Image (tube, rainbow, N blue to C red; front, side, top):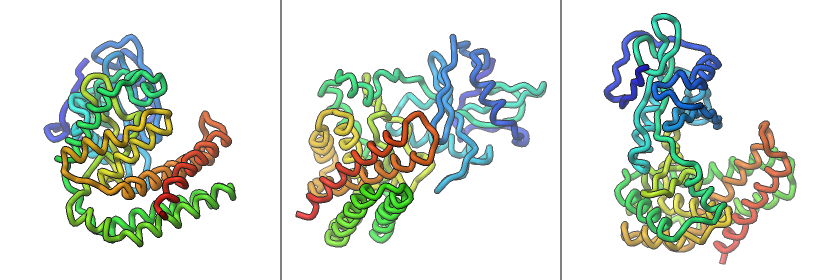
Length: 353
């Protein structure tokens, strides 16, 4: 069975795009005999925006035909464009993992195939299947990481930020973006009907807003010095593979606005999540390697600001889950939101000193 794996820039699939019912695609991709490698089985996982089909060796990602803030995947053409962006952007930090885009075809006989003759009905991102036991979040949970791996990760991130494309962002745009995060968080907690958490959120947002106003020259200087980059956008331990050369997957390929940020923001986010999961204090290691590689020495208060902001945003994401079905109970989501708010409150209070 043909695979059809290719870079989208060289793909030339003839014929008009046709639509096939999503359930039929999922059913087909869930069967081992659909793949040229003939795996022993297929594991299917679901995220907010994708289905992922895991064979023995590879992972195939199929985007959902959904629309949201800043993206619209409802057409096959849009999903094809996004697959190209996903490969190009993720190859920056995960070399050798993102193999190419594979067309899901409707064959002349009416059946489906991965690659081969026919008309395209969707596009899959084909990746090497990484061993989940070596993702950073699981290593933190087992406490079997070692400092050499953290140093390698810090050097990889420092090198990436030193050479990443600079983000074209003005000071007013940065200010508007951050204040929009504060506004959205306040709105989410207002709808959650948790008065205690809403009171905490208001205090944190007020302190962060005051810091932005008071230290506006600092943010302007970061932009003037061209420190902001087109980064990863979602730098969490569960996206970091530690075995051998560190590789970082699943950037926010479909939200360029959320990738345009200060590297300090990304490093503070990773440090925050590691600390929340009971991991080591890696912030000093990350920042030390970043300073050595880039010559940039961000002030501690900027790091603290982004730690507080990221914790606040993660609290918002947790509280929004109250309105969604899932495996966790409302009490668990409220507890997670409260834990993030406690971190944000502590860091933001220190900004007032």
